[in-house]
Image 1: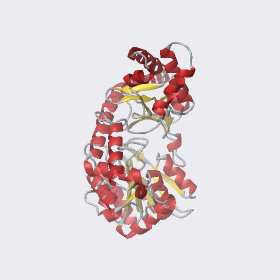
Image 2: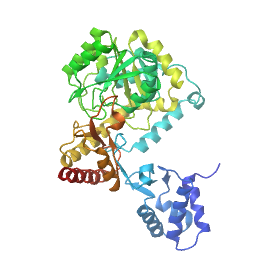
Image 3: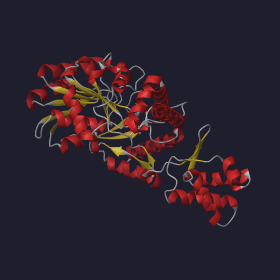
Image 4: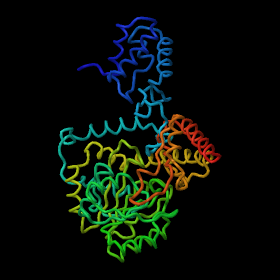
Length: 453
């Protein structure tokens, strides 16, 4: 068996010249540049490197410090030293405030937990079973665990109604294919998830934008649009709406459900952030189980790398929903589904969620201090800067990029006919809170400059 790449790269030092610490740093840099080492790879501890190469520990320390200064590696006490994550924004030298993802959980070693859980799964499960095709949308154990996980928003729900999917985008795409035929109408929020707009366009659906206020869909406007256009479904995100952070109160949720129920219009509930608040609100599906298709995801509550979504369908439509998911993606990834299931059963998922929530709260406080005009709940993963129409957000994005920031404006989120302007700032992507703080101060400076102009 070949040596693990996290060790094999050390041989590169034999063909280099110069001081030992420089040769070691150069070997590491070359291994990363040529793909031998990848973002996130754990590299050997300094004492291990010193032993393997027969050099002083201080020489290795100096080499690692040089590599860290060059942005090649990063270390965390108790976790080790890793090849630094390199994204397109990193390579362009930008701080990413455009990608909406949860921060690393506070007070928890996610890497150690992943390694431990994966080891437990492989120790108790035949790898041949894990690597085979699996019929259906999740096993009984997975669906039962998912029902338990969703209880804070859905209450008690039968596991037979819960289906496992390979991510929320897969689930939304499958549901649109199930619920609507080309040419039929969907009502969506005026600013909505770009993935939903893309899936609707791909299927030739007619999209109608519903006006929004600080709690999301406006009931009076929605009732009028439903009566006028006879849609097949209403699509919405009731908690920490993406991008403008609106959250429906309980009375608003009841009003939206009542409008849909009276008209006989289904609701597609994209509840990506439903479990984020410390005290989650009741999902729309809990108010009308017969008429709401509920989608929740682990990507926004636990980690973006966990591409698992839970679909809760009305009892009468479970079989056809399962078939729709199968037609799109065959099955959820078995190893990932097993990992999430074990996390839920052992309480680790709750620990990760609690850690993500603590970090999200801390980052939201920083945003509130630096940008008090930004909208967003105390546990929101993103905030929204409303701009006046004609406010030229392109200039703000251009100025931000010149200062090393990557932002996203309202453009990708606008439903047809909407001209609303604004900028969404994602708080979870920067790896460190200090980086986020510096980035937000740059945004605040740009806003102040724009206001003076």
